[in-house]
Amino acid sequence: MTDGVPTITFVRYQDSNLSGLLLTGAEMGQAILIIGDNLTSVQEVWFNNVKAILNISLITNNTLFVTVPRDLPSERTDKIYFVTQHKDTVKYDFEVIIPKPSIERMKCEFVPEGKEVVVYGDYFLATDFSKIKVFVGDYEIPTADIISVEKTILKFKAPPKTIKGALEVRTLYGKSLRSKDIFRDERGMITNFDDDYPINPGWGRPDPATFRDDPQYALSGKYWRLAGNITESNAGSWGQLDALCFHYWGEENGKPTGNLFPSDPKTSTLKFEVNVLQEWSALALIFFFHVQGTTNGPMWDNGYPVGLWMPWWTSTGVVPYKTDGWITVSMPLSGFNKDNQGGTGMLSQDFPPAFGSLTIVLFRGGKQGLACYPEILIDNIRVVP
Image (cartoon, rainbow, N blue to C red; front, side, top):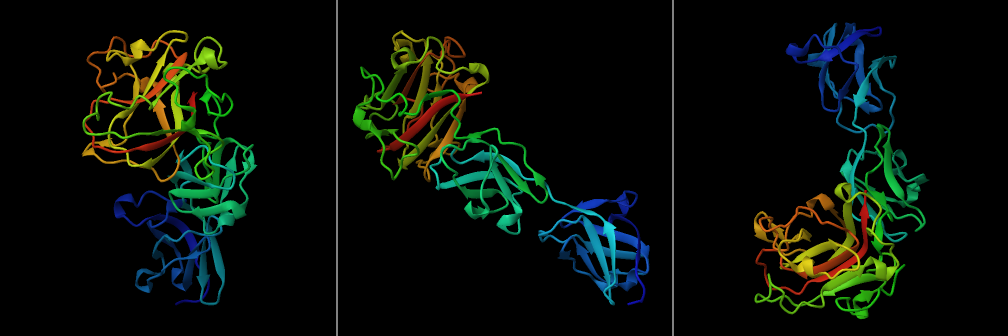
């Protein structure tokens, strides 16, 4: 050790091939080289408020080798602090580069007040909950309502039911872009089974008993429950599942003539919340859109384009599917280009011609599944831009 204080000239990479590149910042875990004078006077090096590990054999009068600490700072000053044995401190402007948070998606876009909202993304970094802020629209989630923070998963209590909007996450290291998904998104709502309940009865409509509002499961009132026995003999054909069918004709339920939603179908996405309580391993949940005021006969033809959701079928074959509570499913309407067997060879057109009525049915899908008794809850069927 020497007396006096150090002088810092510049910082560069330790890699000799990059020695010509001077640094004003580096990522956590990056090995850097400090160039200056009287560096042997340095006893401690701090990045923000995190102390680095020093190896005295890698310190000379003019060079100091060090690695930016991997620990997350609880305060951001964008400085390196060089501390001498006499506790004199020299500051040097230097940013520890920590990416700003990014939001990928929400597990479920509709969550009752006080229940757990789960957000997936990256760099949700905070040493304590006071160092992270979460917004739903302009509403800031109270710190006390933040449940947990991990690098890729953020959980908080759902705000009052009137609060809705895009999410934003802020940390010491920046703020995310507003989420593309909207919390409690009511745009293009076709039915939530409440505002238009009872849905006009008639052929193909579910028995009123299939609309439930059990507080143990309800998101915001009623939901539709599909349940039935799928045997090996009917897995992949019509079989005895007539009750697992839902028809929604717009003109019969107060919708104006035309599409059931205002956005352009070619650039829109069908969304709904689903809770699969019992394992599902056969048949597809098929979505047919068609013209108002006509029969749904074309919807049953193999040549009519539909959308299929069949999460039990994977690249490795059948994997019985159930969810851990409610999730939001997104199906871009541009993908409604399959027949009800999951193929394209027999299609008469590559996109539904109209969106004035909707049929949902647990039906073929084109893959042989396994016998099962699925129990599927559905709510908030909507189409968003």
